[in-house]
Amino acid sequence: MNTGYSEIQSARRSRAEDKAMTAVFTGVGGFFLLLLFAFAGYILIGGLSGFRPELLSFTDDGIGNQFFNTVYLVFLSLLISVPVGVSAGIYMSEYAGNGKFLYCLRISIESLSSLPSIVIGLFGYLVFIQMTGMKWNLMAGALAVSVLSLPLITTTTEDAVRALPSAYREGSLALGSTHFQAISRVIVPSVVTRILTGVILAAGRGFGEAAALLYTAGQSTVINWKNMNITSATCPFNPFRPGETLALHIWGMRTEGSLNPDATRIANLSSAVLIVMVLSFTLLARYLGRKYEAGTEGSQV
Image 1 (cartoon, rainbow, N blue to C red):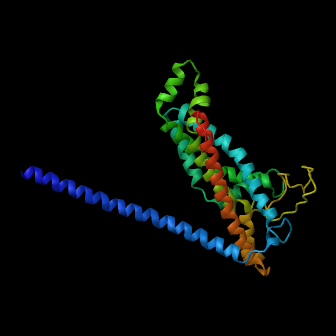
Image 2: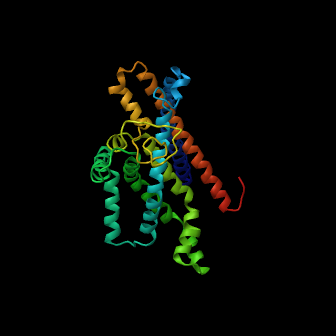
Image 3: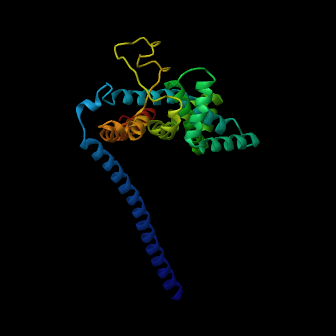
């Protein structure tokens, strides 16, 4: 009798604790979600309140060139960091084993990920600018951003591959595939959505990076949209020309550019455009990832 009553009381306490903790965690999640909406809403309202169409033009009075520079620089950085980072993550999970070398490699990656972006910027300035004898350019900025992105993409890929059930790998090998074929045709397609998460986070950091680009990409933009000679210093697609991004433009408008009567309006609009850009990229990448995953499973989106 007492035993049954004790079990009932224990079950009631467990349910009460479960409800209480569920409410606490829901409240914490809701608080951060509300904070995110408030932060994004404040920036968007501030940016759109003083909006004028000419501020989006591809002229010295607009932010169109800075918008293009931001997208182009992130594109260049992903071309570098994604193949290297994904390859490094696959190596660490499939080939490196569990010895001292892997331990040292992880320590190095963790140390690299903890470096301040300003330090990476100084490193990029010394290596990609000074040692090469070049001036500030988008490629140097893309390389600096790639150094910042590599640890994130590498660790995300390694964790995704290690978390995959061993049956995927063993089933592929049992059917006669080589280790490389199992990786390229079974393992990587199965974890592509998780790898894409690391790529999205890396791209988001590239969109908003300023300190590392201050010493590498430069703060000037001279573009002639009628000039498609990629070797020309004014060609928009020349990766070895200086290019100010939106994040740098915001910093410039809030410092030495503050004498411009439209400085506050331009900085607010640039911030709003930057947020919309990151959100659009994230949604597009998620959509493409789900579509790819559905395609590999033989279903339709």
